[in-house]
Length: 146
Length: 106
Image: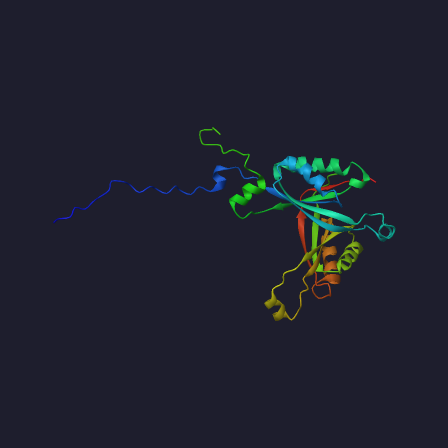
């Protein structure tokens, strides 16, 4: 008996071509902020920072080293500190700086200082999305609709 | 208030109890203050054997923000007093600081 070869007309589905994340989304730089405040004030700072879509912050306990021996001897400088490490999107940095300036100027007890360092790379798109809190940023399609 | 970005952050990782060495060297060369916190080092056992040194896991990390102009002096003073050849076995490196916020009100 002759066997008939079955040929399917179905075409194999083509794999979608790989499009790099940065081609479809705007990439925003990030900065690592170090904020050093007196002991016990870190939580209040983080509450304020949460207004700026901060994804995560870390608190370390540390010690301040007095400016000079006289301050150290008299115990003028409160040496117990909290160090906050947080990642902030570059477009929010100015607002954060202003907020921190206001906070540090409140009273003598709320003095602190902060500085930032540029983050040059992140491993993985999902980590980037998490750190920049881009859940809220909707993708803009080619036709301009969100 | 916010100041210019000509600042550098000195990070020094040193054996526990030797942060004073770092701060004294830094103060001597113009730094004003610093912050320390405790950390735990995870040294490679093979490397320790090869170089014949022991890495104690208890560490202190010293953070000092200074003007860029005095960076080299401060780093070399720290390295001299608390570098790898000393008891502190300190590792020192610097990072550029972009933004800087401080309140100097007394």
